[in-house]
Image (cartoon, rainbow, N blue to C red; front, side):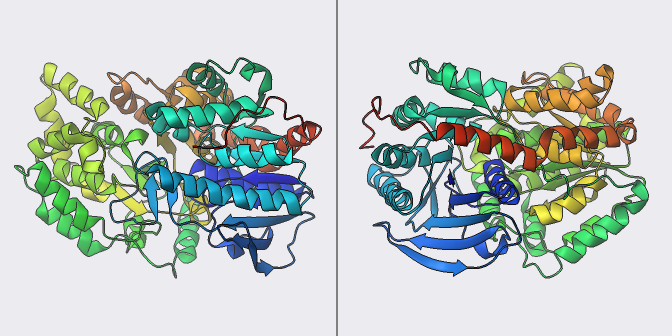
Length: 555
């Protein structure tokens, strides 16, 4: 039997979605798969046949057992934790999670020990032939120790977040990751760029290249579909019906209070106080009255630009917000939909309000304060700052701000809050362009194949795994159209490229919807991705030598 290990839940981030989809795909293929993760609502997933919770010593308690409508079955195991270590700092009022970089050593020791105890029990009780673990830390540490003791081979799939946000900033984490990768039987890669990153960050792993195997991101091509413009209103109706009974996150009164509290001469500490009040809502829910915002869109004729993902500075959203008034100059009926959650939500909405209200100084200050408005280091958002400086040098800045103040931005930029995939599958096909201007290296962003499967034209930073995904997407279109998918990573040009590429792409999106969809089906369907992974993991099963295990017994 195969075992998948993931340190988080099964919804939200790319690695969460990858794990859920692979587990489901394996069940469809008839496999029995053991899944170790932190999903706290396993009953909502129809492929999970059993769920168990484990105390700190590794003793299990059965949560439920049931029949499932698949040839195979998934057995989920959840170690009970005191705190969940994360790669990105959670909101200040969240006490159940903390950044790995902020946690003391004893908390990290406890986290790894609890997971190791669970894994040891699973490996002892079940005939596990191979283990796959996401991220190079911290679950890979627990897997490394448990598999070494049991003589079971394991493979590690690195994702960009653990490397970029943790490993590169903490030598102790880098050493733990190095030990796990060095002793892994296989290093699964989601992009060619990740191969170079592993070799660069861990040059002392001399046999890394020989252990690398290409895997893939994927998409449920049955969930996402292409629809004609005439059917968009119907699809949005299904979206509204699907979230009709959902509790809500960001409230209208919070948005009004933020807007009313902004002024041109606002200082940083005053803005932070406003943002603290604004952010007091459950993060993983749709906004209050988001249906009314969606009803204000003409779905048959408006140009719909979509961002889906975390609302954090690393995703490049400030550049997209600053670019949007210039996009509207060329495509006046454009609408920008921002779907997601994150610590930058309030600052992004404040930036929209500042631009709409003509608060030039405040808008520029938000960009200069940068990470401080997100709760991170006070580093400026350099991509939109470069764009504004360039306008200023060309004596075009006044005209930009005047257009922004007259562009009806508050109505044309729609924040939806957090939307699960059972909601996004109704929204994606109603959009023309999906844009992902990430400023850090992405391993294999799932949003690109999801956009393709919906016939939505993807645009992203031509960098790392995002660039690799765009290479595939570009196969569906002529070369001159494919170039519009790519934004230069150089901070001096990214925002300018958004302004230039998005309007041009909107002229052609209807021509290539079916071609993008067909390519996504051929290259990214989850069942084929899961089958390929199972083949590689079964090939690992004969490996049980512990001759080269390194000492990973202590953090």
